[in-house]
Amino acid sequence: MFESLTDRFAGIFKKLRGQSRLTENNMADMLREIRVALLEADVNFKVVRSFCKDVEEKAIGQDVYKNVNPSQMLVKICHDEIKELLGNENEGLSLSKGGIGTIMLVGLQGTGKTTTAGKLAKLLITKQKKSVLLVGLDVYRPAAIEQLKTVAIQAGAGFYSDGKKKPQDIAREGLEEAKRGFYDVVIFDTAGRLQIDEPLMEELHDVFKIVHPDETLLLVDGSAGQDAVNVANTFHERLRLTGAIMSKLDGDAKGGAALSLKYLTGIPIKFQGTGEKLNDLEPFYPDRMADRILGMGDIVTLVEKAKENIDEKEAERAAKKLMDGTFTLEDLLKQMKMVQKIGNLGAIAKIIPGMPKITDEQKALVEKETRSFEAIINSMTPYERRHPEVLKYSQKTRIAKGSGKTNADINRVLKKYEQAKEAMKAMKGMKNGGFPPGFPKM
Image (cartoon, rainbow, N blue to C red; front, side, top):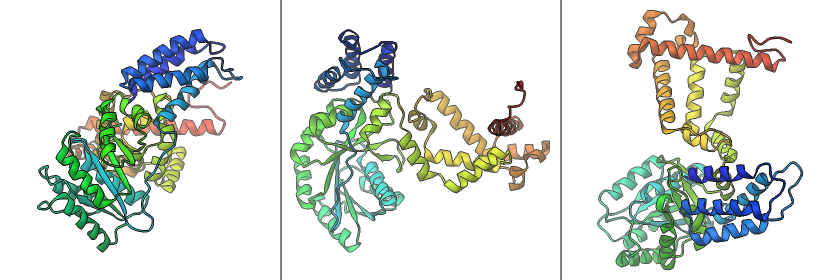
């Protein structure tokens, strides 16, 4: 998401480089391009108009500080305005501290509420150490209750439902089950509906009055564009929405929904879905999203992901072995697995500032090579992984058969391994004040 908008902003800022200050003349062209870029990203026209007006007021006549050019100044102004559109600060969940916290998840049909319920449960269990009960109220969609049960097991949460009863009765019994099981939080997964479906909206309101949820979260499809605002307003009229979860932020949607929602409805985006796995739900931080939109990356999120998924002591040990040139294929495999835990290559690239775009073909190629690399190393004996220099033709043939690869694939892995060792030796030499191999000495 936001990829085309990010490109447009990059082009706009580039044109300002070399200017001595921000003036009405150079700003007029920039604002025109910004307006077009936002409208093409499906941002509501009222939001676009307000955004451009605020940027203009803050930018024109702005003194350009020493060592800061107009392009950098405009980046700062746009960053602050985008952050304000998105809500300025992350608004976390506000759950009951003296009893059971209750969350009601609502939204349209087909937005992925059931999976998101599991993601939210997983996040609460792993990050906040809460015990969570998932209650299935969707008695209309075939296999919806079974799907939620499966998701609950995967997330490590409890589960309750009864497809033979009305959603209102299931909600009451779910609260009782939560009390009996001493759960910290209950998440009610409601049936998807059209906002014009009056009977279902009335049913939703009945459940709301029974549950009295601490949080009523609307799941918004990131690809819905401006229509997401209409959906949010309709649900907000019938329920007391406290926040939204923006799904599919890892997709190719234009981003208009995210940039319009808070400004036009007052409903904060509290979480963002970044993939299909249960771990792919993150708190929504407006400042970090503003960084991404303006092509500044998101190093804070990258560091957080690394801390959560990488063993620090193991990483330090591996780094020392890398610099010493004593790391083995076994070590290399461990590092690859640790990096994979952070996320796929495309997701990592998007949050590293200055990282070039990675095409779908490139991502597929890297993932294919990674799987091939892992299959080959796993087909070796522990001794062979630590001492690949002992591998002869017969052993390579055995490994090739075991991994479903060819001898040429085995040789390619060994060659890359040797190249990595040589590169590490060169880096160590430079770190110690020396020169890399073949570098002419002065």
